[in-house]
Image (cartoon, one colour):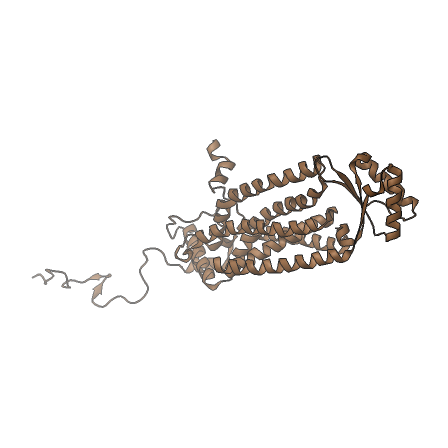
Length: 395
C-alpha cells in the first residue's frame, strides 16, 4: 500500500494533479494577490532603509555593553541635543558576537551629528575616536534603484531572446509573466509586513529572478518533450500533455526548491537570528521569500498560462477538437478508446461545447460510406457472372 501512496505517485509523476485544468482558479488567486500587493504599494508603501530614505548612522564598539544598552544611550544623546528623533534601527555588525553596533537615525545635520557623537562618547566613557558617524544621502539609493531597474530590463530582454530561441515565443511570454508575478508578490510581502528595503534587498530581488527562471525552464523542457508531435496523437490535448509534464516535474521542482531554501534558511535564521549578523538578514530574507514564491508561480502560473496561449493557436485548436470529438464518441460507445485519456484525467477542455457537435458528426467505426452503390453489384457484392473465377453462367 505504501507503494501506491501519494509520495510514491508524486515521484513517479502519477499523482494526476489537475493543475492546468484548474487554471482559472490559479489565475484568480494570483490576480487577487497581485491586486492586494498593488494596493499595499500605494497605501502603505515600503519601509526604506537609510540608503534610500537618507539618514545618519553611528557605530559604537560592542565593548560598551549590549545592543539594548547602546540603543538606550544613543536615544538619550539624541534627546539631550533636542533633535526630536530616535534610533530607527540597531544591529550588530562585524564578526561573531559583533565587533560593533550600528544605530541608524533620520537625517541629522553635521553639527547635530557631531554633538550627538560627542555626548555618546561621554556617556559611555570612551574616546570619541572609537565612535564613527556617517551621513547617507537618499540620492545614493536612487542611483542604486536606477541601476537595478536597468539590470532588470537587460535581464528580461536576454531571457526573452533565450526562451524564444530555445522554445518558442509563447513559452517566453508565459515565463516572463511568471517572473513578474513572482517579483510583485515578493515585493507585496515586503510592503505588507514592513520589511526594510536595503541595497541587499535589491540584489536579492535580481538573484531570485535567476532561480525562478531555472524552475520555469525545467517544467517547460518537460512540456516540450511531451508535446512534440502532439497533433499526430488523438488521445491527448495540449493541456493534457502540459498537465502531465507538470506532474512529472513536480517533485524535481520541489526538491530543487527545498535544497535551495535550506542554506538560505540557515543564512537567515541562524546567521541573522541566532548569531546576530544583521547584515545577512536583508539578503537572506528576500531570497527565502522570493524562492518560495518562485516555486509556486512556476507551477501554478507559468504552465497553465502557456496552455492557455497555445489554445489560441489554430493548429492546436483543431487538434484539441479532434481529441475531444473522439472522446465524445468513445463515451457513447461508438469508438473503441484504446489508449484514450479517462474522464478523470481529462482537463476542463473536455467541456468544450464544440466537441459535442463534432462528436455527433463522427462516423461509426465500420460504417459504410454514404453515396451510390457501384453499378453491376447487388447487395454490395459482385453479382453472378462477375469477375469471380469460374463465374460462368450455369446451365
